[in-house]
Image (cartoon, rainbow, N blue to C red; front, side, top):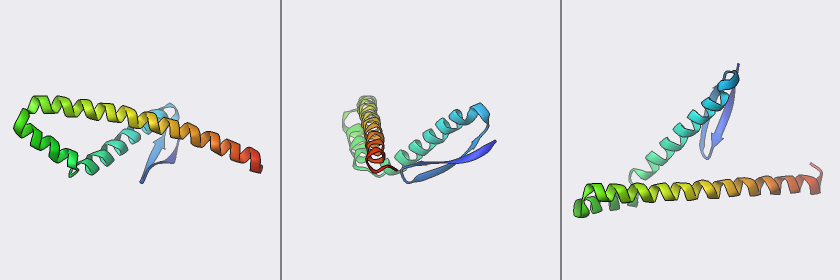
Length: 102
């Protein structure tokens, strides 16, 4: 049993590790961290106001479907970009250590 610090962006979360449950705890901490950060940052965002204005003019169900679809696509694109950056930074870090002997 131990604890470790997970850091994602500007958020740090202390995760209690209990044998095989560490991956579940990390998953839960990552989900809570991402949800909280996105929820707070999007609350007063221009997308929030645009969706509210469109819902008044076009209908709530249609705007909800469109906004949800757009958010889903943007989330997939963001995750893909993050994975690419993670792989590239890992390759660069490995190359740096091979060249500089660290």
